[in-house]
Amino acid sequence: MLAETICSAVSAAGLGIAAVTAYRKRFLAATRIAAYSLVPIALVLTGVVQWVSDIAFKPSVWLGFGLLGLAWLLFMTTRAIERRGVGTRKERRAAAQAAQRDAVAPAVSALSGSGVPALQPQAKPKPKQQATDAGEDFGDIEAILKKHGI
Image (cartoon, rainbow, N blue to C red):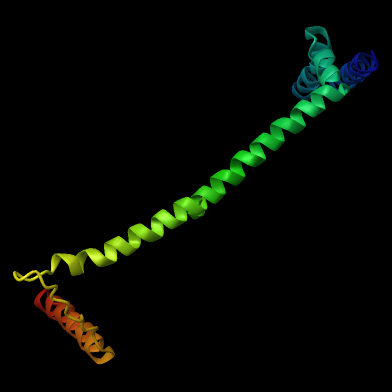
């Protein structure tokens, strides 16, 4: 009831301001002000104001909004945890075992004909070798650029 009265008063004041503006020969501005001032009374007549006031003053509605917010928060938290890759203990243990199997698989496939595994230590490239490899890569790039006249 109070909201309807306030909306009616705002509309009446807006129409009064529109009339004064039209009296000053500013018809475009007066029309715009009249349009804005008709919105509150239109909302009252359509029942939107009653609906909003029913929502705003009922605790059960706010409890419902709170529960919706909590559900959204829980959903987003689980999505964030899922994206980080942190799962349950079983999932982490299964991932670790799968990684271990992947590391052992090349050694098992390198079995010799006698059935004895031919484990050969893989030589890691020395830092000097990496530097020369990088230099060779740049040499190739330089050759290509020279070939095209750049």
